[in-house]
Image: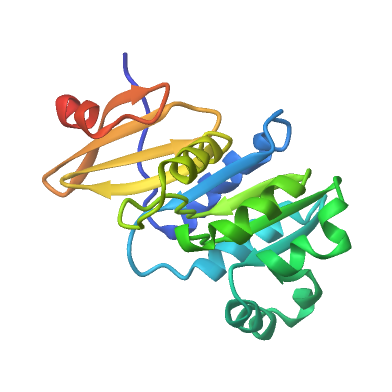
Length: 208
């Protein structure tokens, strides 16, 4: 069957694809969503603000970061919304945590932020979008109970946008569509296969 699947030609087109994924997610019964741009050199605060502008058209939106340094930088760069920017810990301790009609964006949560990110996420009942989260790290020595808790936490998140270059290939997901695998040939990318769920490395290798 002929398809018109193609990769975005630049970051601006990627951000438009991301917006196309965010809009229907607001009607999804799930409350936790991930957005992932997996390549080097990106300014994630810019992407985070783009997500903010998309969501703030019709919602009360907050942005959260792991540490105060990141918060201070974002408040300096975006002074018009500085009262909407918090650390994970300070947001969890604020009255905003109980605002079920709001939306939250979390920027780059890392495995070592888990102890502040998980309780904030669990206490918050509004829609929650996480940009490039990394919830697990095999290099961090943790017990089996905590590792299982983190795995269960990861399962509560639903990806709505994903873009990653691979070795002579690329993987993309734009909710509510399937995951798309592309192969590079002569510096051009051609659609190869679609998947209902994110393919593992073996599935990718077999289909290239």
